[in-house]
Picture 1 (cartoon, rainbow over the protein chains, first blue to last red):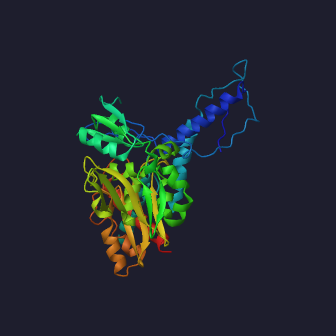
Picture 2: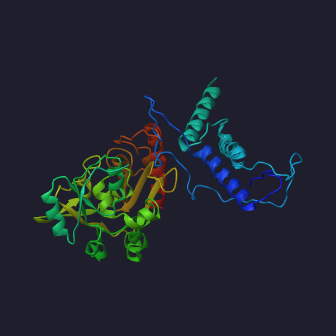
Picture 3: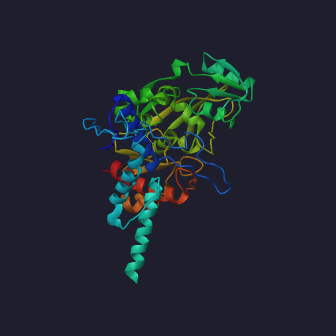
Length: 136
Length: 272
């Protein structure tokens, strides 16, 4: 669920598109899309095969609601910016959810995008820290 | 993204395909084109001629053949996935066909194309290896059979000669348990690691996808199972003899760890 303050809505279809597309982009930033370079500085994610833009299968279904408008007081139309606003809150929301899901294992941080390998490494590191702490 | 120049010929029989291959050493067969054409666009391969066998309808079939199922090499993934006969007689092939790529790929790509392409990240070669499939290669001198263990000698290499056409794939009927564990980042992607397990003769055949230069049997796991090990213990030997790649989808170390988890899940499902 996402809540955005977009002031007076002039074109609901465009607002819906910007919110949905923005959230998809944010989820992608949190879990999939990454520019990876090798040791010689070559971009290894240079095609759509390796640069993981999510498809419809990877993007969650969203609930949006436009019933509560809060008009801006600084312009005559009462409008506020809504350009891809979904991208702002969705990366921390998704990454924090991932960390929360494995926090019982001692994980406190995972870098974006939270790829399966990064999550696995974070768990391995937490286990190693735990073992060290237990031995001391 | 533009392929090198090539000639194109559409043939109307396996025999004329063989003749066309013999006439031009640089020729390659075109079936569904969903592996070959992307490689041509990157100029990884530059065939002088494409011999299009995609419309040979008589090489597209699924037939019960005593204790086996005979599958025409040009049968498309979608037809495998939708076949009631295959779902009943060898369900792992039907199920995995439905996991390859996306719907567009599955409506064009063929089982034989996947085998001949011999991509170690391909799902079908690994599944057919676990099943102990038999491959029928047809050349100018007639047909010969190739055992599953001999079919994939190297990276993107099959046992087919330059002028041979893969015409049929025979898989044993599998009444017992099976599992294919495909780990992907996105639904349409190649497997980061895949594991096929098929229950056979009281034990299980296990093979690995994308864990080396070729699809391979997990011989350490099979040996442990034959010695009476439980799935979790046997799965610890998943990466024995493998040489997994490191790429943007996962490091070698991660793939080794992943293979153990996926082998355990596959065995638990297949042997349940």
